[in-house]
Length: 176
Length: 429
Image (cartoon, rainbow over all chains, first blue to last red; front, side, top):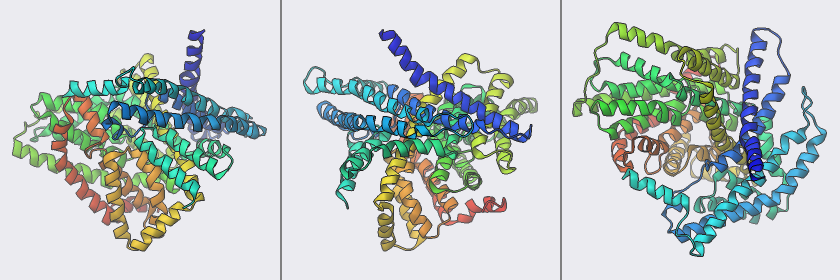
């Protein structure tokens, strides 16, 4: 069961963005080719491009979060002692979990609200364009829970520091 | 200041203290604003998603990210390096010059400073180290020369600026050409002086057969910017479409001309691209929510009025902007500066009658200087990381190149025609 769920997660956060990006890329090439070589502009490519872009960015952002690739300002955090760092990251992550959780229902409602519209050429329902945002919210909440647990262990003395900070420290020592 | 705005600002500042991912933190602060205001929370979804759904220009960003990743995986970087080495010949400190010339040539293909430093830079640093240059000097020159990338077209930060300021991407691309070429010349003069003082080795004598071979091998790669610029300025393709054509061309030469990529490599490139897009583009979406709050609270207008009460001189304003961006650049990522702070500056610059294209070049170039500015310049970390050189040693070598870059910043700030005459000559202004 866990394997299936992990595979599904890869499908949504990695394979769909890769396929969406590939489709939007090909659509661009066809768009230029048909407009300037065949002299018959295509209209449906626009739909593929914008829908592909939305899915690539929103679902890809979940993959980036999983790979810890989101841009953060670490200058102050790196200077904190382990317990202060744990409290700081815990507070930030709790804030994220709470604010993202309250957004879940409005995001579903919004996707339903816009579902009466369809794209011009391919008639893709707007619901499918906006609903990935709800997955994005849930995914970010999911990836934020793990560091919350880790930080709580540091605060309660079960761990001495976070794995990420230990790794950073190790890298610094190797370089020095 | 309203209570809701105050709460938003507090959360916004906490992003930096609590190490929240910046894009995620910006969305959180927008939610706090709407909650306190009692407004409809779906505004966040509306703003973020409609940025992606309706803003055609920014689709160029993932396309150029993809192109940069393909170029770095294929042998394109090797070809450019070999060509630049052949061109420099017996000059003293030839590899230092190669480092800079290579960056200019590579910048015409990717528009990403990070791609330049991590790809081409790695080859250059290794070659310089083997030839007897201090590795710190090689790292510093790689970081400094990577600044050329996003100034010369195509450029990811210039595309984002075009979206923020509603200006022409084509005009912005052309306006970056002269500053990028000038930076190349300035840095080469610096390398020539240092090479003379430190007696760095000369390059190899030009053997015409080798020169011809390297040039022929490099031609497919060197044609990239030519195809792109001709395509954009003859109206065959939009700058966004040019991003896709650049990606296709990079794939074709990597697969067929250089035979340096296979399907497995392509899959890895796509994975890396998705990770990069997921970080850069979500920042753009999140920043639009903040822009919505800034507009609703008339914050930009108030800050603008405050700045205008301090000075109505556009030269003074440009000086203040340059100092602010330089300071921010020491500590922050360029996307944060561009998407959070630049939108506040744009209306003031417009009110003072500063040309938006000129302002775009100044801001972009300045942010790129920030990538090499201690203590937290990203390029310093990258070159330190790929060579396992202590950061403090690289910092020691970066000061003079920084002075050179700042002199050019001053020149392009106060001589707008340097940036504007090319787009004007092309009829884009």
